[in-house]
Amino acid sequence: MLSTNLSYQLVTRDIGKSLDRVGKQPAVKRETAYFLANIGKVKSADEFVKDSRLFNYAMKAFGLKDMAYAKGFMLKAMKEGVSDPDSFANKLTDKRYAEFVKAFNFEAHGENATSYNAARDLTVSAYVTRGTLAGLDQEAIRQETAYFRATIGTVESIDDLLDSPRLLTYALEAFSLEEHGFTRAELARLLEGGVKDADSPANEHGDKNVARFVAAFNFAEMGESTTTHVAAQHGTVANYLRQTLEENAGDQNEGVRLALYFQRKAPGLTSYYQILGDPALAEVVRTALGMPAEMAQADIDRQVAAMEKRIKLEDLKDPARLDKFLARFSALWDASNATATATSPALALLAPATDFGISASTLMAITTLKR
Image (cartoon, rainbow, N blue to C red; front, side, top):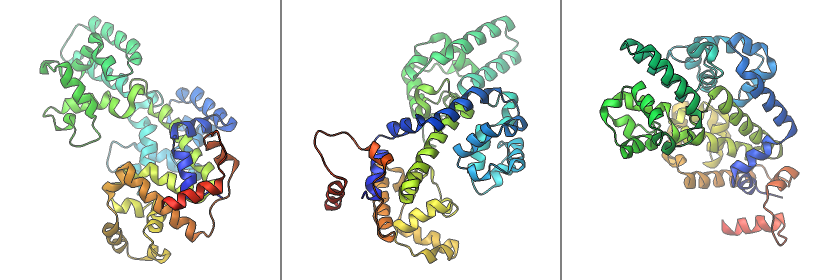
């Protein structure tokens, strides 16, 4: 018998390998191959929903598999986009819909929605617009743009960009930053800081174009895939693999699935109301804090007040504290569900090879002693 916490640790100890195993499963591999081979051909939201295989893949990737039948609903969300705060998707309490629409943003990018790359297309658009408005030589604009489009995909790091004068000049001119005279060290500091943190160097800079530039070349978050990342493709595949990993774990132990889901969502939580608006997140928190099931029926503000006293959202952004929180959840989950999960072939494959034998029961005993 494996405890929920031990099963969770086996999956997350090397999450990259765990996801790689999921990606190699025949059904997953087949559906992913179909998605990548065909999504780029889709030029409108209507075409998208007509291909049920593509649409279902995407819906599952964003945790919306149960709503795949509601094509009219999703068409309305996609056609209104997310640029307007009052758009249909933005007004929905469940933010998964807005995330889906942002990835398949036909409203903003039109027929290029399934192939849009910010580092490439946003920069080109800005450069061409600026050059045209300034009356620059159109032949030069076309020539530099062609070079940028053909070459930017080879850039895999901040150093690569800073070591490519022609590409860097194009990018800086696109965002009207050439007159700042940034040194290499200053540009590296800006790019390394990203834009996720409101206090990052780019966000604190007086020129808002700096943040636009760093957002386009977001190496801080996307690493080497920055210049080739297409949200409608790469982001969806990554989400699909993670969703499948969580589903597979849930088939063996629902507690592991809840823990994995919470681990994925926790860093982005900014409000206790977000937790209460998501049944899975709320169940993890109530279980970890030892709250009775009846608490779910209490006034929402009372629930928030109870959570605020016992857990800080900032703690959930710290990996060590998050692990400790989920270990507590796992222990209480097992206690409330009477027995730990039986060893499964899927989880057994995740266990490391050893030169000597240690049984699952012995591992569990060791874990218990450490507690």
